Image (cartoon, rainbow, N blue to C red; front, top):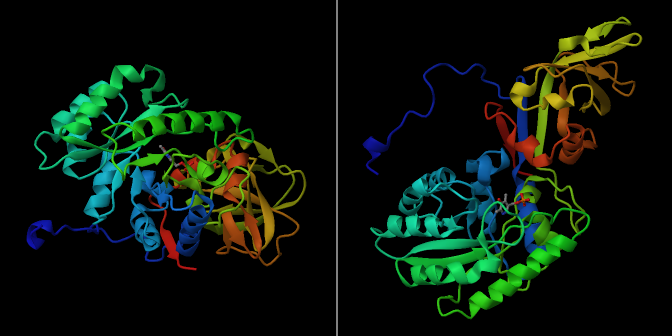
Length: 395
Ligand SMILES: *Cc1c(COP(=O)(O)O)cnc(C)c1O
């Protein structure tokens, strides 16, 4: 691009509200841990499996730009995204590795995918036709993947009706498309009982063996079915690539031979500490009442920042190595904590509390917070407000 026409004003002309990103509430990200978690997946997955880290939803909320730059140091095969816009963003960032789209996208966005040099996936014949049309003007064959449905039920060609669609896929692969890979998605690889996930893997392996013998099959075609849990807990015969996401970002709700290092910390500062008399109520709806004299801290973070409202009267935070329970409902930008007996009396306004992550040797894990909030680690991470400053550490 011509430098002049490519020049864009990145910063808004208004002065930033604060020069200090750690003034109020922030997200701390450990880039070293992110990288080591990817290496752990590499070691646990099938030997030689290509790595396709998933960086959808702004790399699970941590910030895709830094996440990709960090993950590139492990030389992954490519990156996985959910949408065409996410893939195009990676290209604008200068990513040269293959970028594969792994969620179904509206056919109207396929032309953009082709222009951006992404690898779209198709799950039915009408999407295949739309892709062929979008690829008509491309200089060479356009790579694409097919998804097959082994039980997830949200996308994928039906394996039982293979005869109804395979010939069209093969014809496209002989025409202006190139069959880059075949994949499926596991619905229960993170459940305690792996029986259904194993059945999905078997169905996938059976189909993959059949595809490998087709004349349209290429030597370097990708076959993949594993998310984080699959890569760590299951073994597919056909698979030559894996698509880990949550484990890289420190999430692991399942039993696995290795654990991830924590990557994300959510912290905020105390705005006010005070002793309250018995009967004082906390927050909207007055859903908590002090049962005696209690020490409360009001913290400058709320659901508008990504601290789930469902943590009201349920969640907790670490404060100077001690524990403080959330009392009352979480407000948009504030929450009240009851400081426990193990919180030093010296804690005061300006001190830091940790909702997710480590503090003085204690740790409150993403999974624990998710459980208290009645959700999953994925939702906690992707719910962190993009407005919260992200501070990157390289441990
Ligand atoms: C999100 C996603 C993954 C990664 O799953 P994790 O559970 O985060 O490891 C892999 N494949 C597909 C198709 C996905 O949508």
